[in-house]
Image (cartoon, rainbow, N blue to C red; front, side, top):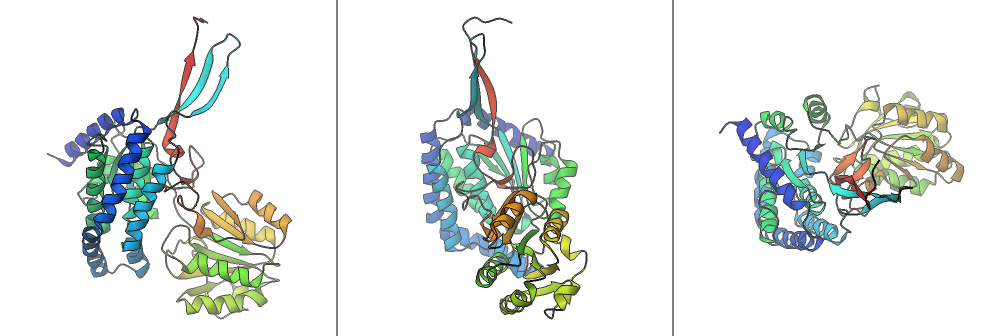
Length: 416
C-alpha cells in the first residue's frame, strides 16, 4: 500500500466513525473518557519508557533543554493528561445545544443547533500530551480524529494513542474514532493536507515553519496560530514586587511554551527602579537578556536587534525595550506581537482598560502572567490549540470551538 493509499484509507475510516460519533450519547462519551484516564495512569511506566526513547533520540540530535522539557513526560504530566480527560468528561456536551432560535412571522420555528465539525486532523510537534488532550476534546464533541505528531515524539505519541484508542473502543466508541499516523515520513503531512474529502478542519500546533507549510499546502480549512510572541508591559506605576513576580513567572516558569513571555516592555519612568532587580532575578534563573539602547543605559545586557522583537525564542532568552509612553508600548505590541497573549502591570485602572481595548490579541491580561492562556486554566478542560485567527475560533479552543451548527426549522405546512 502506498502512502497515499494508506492516508485515503485512514480518511475513509475516520469519516465512517464520525457518522456514528455525532449521535452518541453524552454518557457513552464521558464513560469512555474516564476509562481512558484510568488506563493512562495504569500505563504510566510504559508511557515513560517510550518517552525515554524519544528523549534519548532528542539529546542525540542536540535538542535544546527547553525543547526536551516540552517533550518530557513525568508522572505529574501523565496524571495531568488523565485529569484533563476527566475534566472534559465533566463539562457539558456542546452537541445539540441550541445556539439561537426565533419564530418567523408565519409561525416557522427556526433554530441553530450545535453539531460536530466531523473529522479533525491534528498536526503537532514536541508535546506528546497533545495526543490525549486533542483526542479527548474531539471525542467529547463528537468528532473523529486523525493525529500526526512530530518525529521527535513518535514513540510517546503512539503509546498514548494506542491506550486512548483501546479504551475508547472498549467503551463503545467506533473503532477508528481516533487514529494516529505511525510514519515519520514528512510526505505524510502533504498527503494528509489533500484529504479534503474526508477531513473537515486541520489544527496545527508547532513551529513557524510547520504552520507556514500547512497554510501554503492545505486544501482543508486551518485553525492555527503562527507564533507565541507574548509581551508584558510594566507601566510607570507598576507595583515593583508584583511586576517582578509576573515577569519571572511569564518568562521562566516554562520558557518553551507558546504563552511564555518573549519581550518585556518597561515605561522609561519606571525602568531605573524596576529593571535592575528584575534583570538580576532573571539572570539568576539562567535567562539571557537583550536590550534596546535605553535598556542598556539602565542594565548591562547584549544589544537587541530588530529581529529580536519578532522572535519566539521558546528558551531562556528575553528581549527588553524601554518605551517612552503607554502608546509606544501598545504600538510595539500590535506591530511585533503575534496576537497571542499580552499583559500590562499597572495600578492605573484607566490605563488597564485602555490596554484591554487597544491591544489586538486573543488574550489580554491586567496584572497577571501570560502563562494562564491555556484551555485547562480557562475552564475548558483541555485545549485543541490556541488560535490567533479571528475566523471561527480565537484563543484557547475547547469543545464549543470543535463544533459548527446546523439550521433546524419546524413548520406546520408553511410554504413560501
